[in-house]
Length: 423
Image 1 (cartoon, one colour):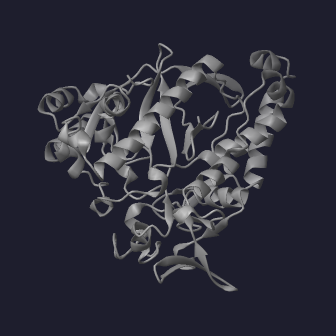
Image 2 (cartoon, one colour):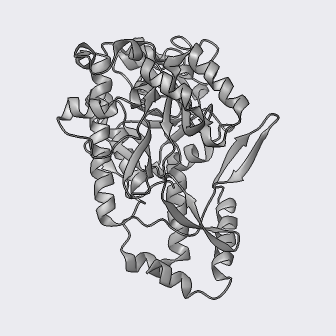
């Protein structure tokens, strides 16, 4: 039906709609900032007018697989900081976990409200040439991009209104309400009407559009660290009417910068003393501090075993096959086959610090060989997959492009997978 609608358009009409939509998105402020050596450049978020269609049977597998995965990872995080049964049973090597840069000893013995650590997750999926979906990575700290999904869907509905009606596409526009409910659900001490805020690093952050968009959609205050203060064991927001107690903070600031008294003392983005309030149970942080341990790329290699350990089930969504360079056998294989593999550092994101073997130079491979030998714990490697392709409008013609896909998962009173995502 989608193809038929596109074929029925007058010549040049699709390209005209693409350009008109891009202009509309820019006027709406749907942008992100790319930082170079000297200054940031504001750009429209890449947009393609051809929607990616996922059949109901495919989506059912994705949805069930993501719910299973997030459920198990939350149990894993709670276990790691408390009973450590999975470490005692030897399922995940303790030395790998304790050496992770995102392991937070400050969270040992802590139980977040409702026992939920990662309330908001963005999981990156790829589809292989055989049609099967694989998990590429988990983002359990502060996943971004959902605002672009919501805005792009709204624009596409205006561009192809009849198509959306005929195909009975599942809506995503209730995500902000779902998110607001999730934030309210984890309020401390059973507060029924909590004061919720979104904490942003500020206007110079690349995802600031998303921060302001989500705060506006949820009807909550958008604040910076300087707008909050700790007093008498609680967090307060500064207002023209005096201090106002804050119960739940949806934070878009990394652990390291959240509290200069506990983490980086040079941080100007966070709130001094907030960690003490958090551990006392007088404020909820979403996502919880310490969730990064579950998206460490070394721990990723053990997620299939983690799922089986906590649920007794086989993973519905498999991992991409992964070599862990701290294992001698894996490391030897990786060093001998760098030109055929993708090598990733454990705690980078956004594609930083990656070697794509088939497209790399000998000089770059030699550099990565030295990096791996110097710090094998910090690297994994994966084969290059034969990814499926989807049609996109490139200029005035169609092309097939390899893509990944990021659905968003909310963990509150139940686990909700938004029926869509960032492609």
